[in-house]
Length: 243
Image 1 (spheres, rainbow, N blue to C red):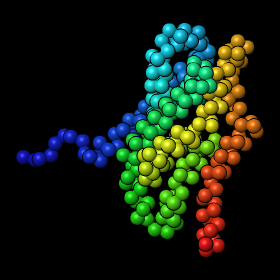
Image 2: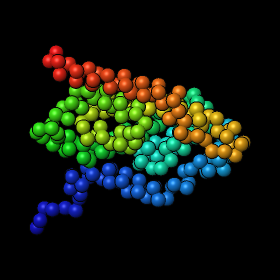
Image 3: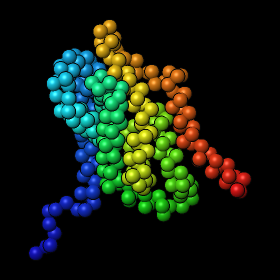
Image 4: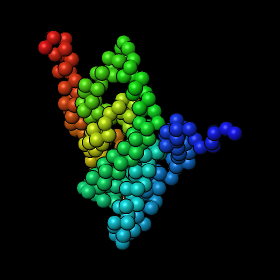
């Protein structure tokens, strides 16, 4: 009689969390686009404010739980969630709630990706040769700078910044710290927009989400990104000069 069982192979079990995230993300993309929208927030603003006033802690708990799920499963609506945080809780502590929830969700998808693919892919990169190995070593030598850089540059999609470190064997504590601190500038901008939605609703308008690209907003953020990249540039220059 065979000793084989019907239990999933270890490799399959390792991939289940990442596969679940992928499936939920696909379903959410096609089903939640209209639900998690600015119009939904506008239509339910009075009910949300009334519920918050009556049950502040419950509202906070539900809000953060939904935000974590949105980020953790890469669902559409992260921007709306950030605006909602500002609308319900003001710029502060709304920005703190937004950053905390986003960091928790990002850490969840990071761990799932690392458990499923990261360790194997990282091992292959570590034992590779030529240019691939040089790139891997360069990232390893400048992990803090690279992690902050991908968080601060608005052109890097949030889900990409969540997944890439998982494939490069970034320590969890380093990922969490850089994520929390690195997303603060953008989160504060969008949370402040959310905090002013009351006036926007009264005028029957929609918020200007392109505000993050306004010179007075984007230039300080790019300045922080430049500071993050400075150690990488200095190392490169020292390497060329043989210092």
